[in-house]
Amino acid sequence: MIREITKADRNTYLLFAQAFYSLGAVAHPIPRRHLVATFDHLMETDTYAKGYIIEQNGKSVGYALTAKTFSQEAGGFVVWIEELFILPEYRGKGLGSEFFAYVKQHIEPTVARIRLEVTEDNRGAIDLYQKQGFEFLPYQQMIKDLLR
Image (spheres, rainbow, N blue to C red):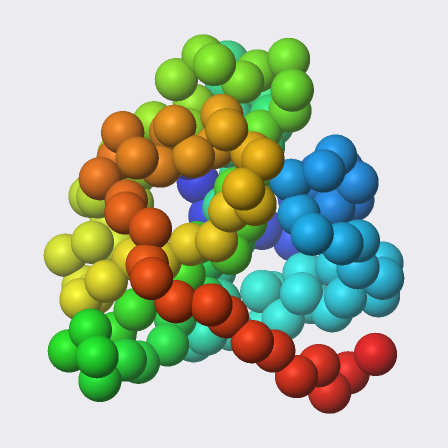
């Protein structure tokens, strides 16, 4: 089951987000204060970002974050799947596909594009995303961090 995150999920979210940033699925770790700030923002508004809890048999086993932006190139709103994390012992059981079924039903009808990032060595995630119809873009990304 996929559901929107609530205030009661704070500790679970922070635990899962810390695991996400320490298990090699990302290019670098981030400070805990960023995780806390994200959760606090999610509880204030869903204008730019939304959080989800992934459950199996009533137990929280993962989370996802999405963010909304606008893209002239895409011709409308774009939802970024910022993070998708499932506890290692629950991977390969269809939960990622279940999340994308939720996305298809609840998010896809309202946006022009769905976008995500993945590290080159995260083969399991790449396989899942390609099965869902995602393709690689021929772009390099650049960033300028302003909050450190």
